[in-house]
Length: 253
Image 1 (cartoon, helix red, strand yellow):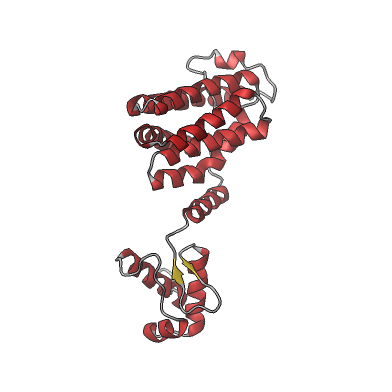
Image 2 (cartoon, rainbow, N blue to C red; image 1 turned 30 degrees about the horizontal axis):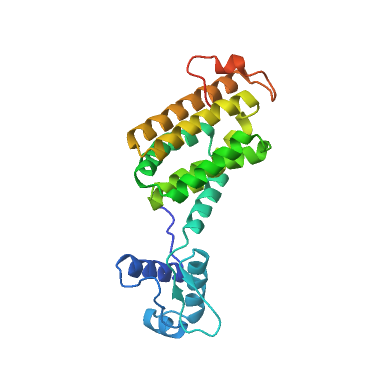
């Protein structure tokens, strides 16, 4: 009838209060928090409680504490801490291929569309360099897969949207794993490269609608090949011409 009550730790309450001050705009990056003693007095808790709360905030990338300084410094926010934490959660949850593709279908066409509208010359150069490396054939299997993940993250970064790029960084390991699993042969790799070149060209031409369409086409074809390989349970090194000739199957992760 009654659920067990969860009484929050005092340090969690302190953290929530500081987060509230940040959300309300009363605390801003570059500002210093009051000293441990002053925070303890103001909030009516012990200094060890404040110390524990500050340690957790530092772990979150929210504050920086240096010896000899009075009060923790509020940081601008390390987005890599957020994406790394999300990646770890996804690893622990063992997110499956199907779930990952649902997210990718929602996120990556949007990223490509925004990238075509907001990309800078540095983004185009980085994408071009990755694609040139993929086309050169100098990458081994793991390096090829890592380059694929890098290309997708760069597209997301070119979108100019912090949340899109953070989410893409978080799932980049899933992209790497998909590539490791399914990019087993040279013909599949070449098909994949042609897809990425089409996405890149649309972004370079500043055509948001085409960039979205090319990314959607790429994901559709990738899904077809992955599903064909899963259903056939093809072992590593299997001939892929039968797979890529299946209806709609002409892509890769």
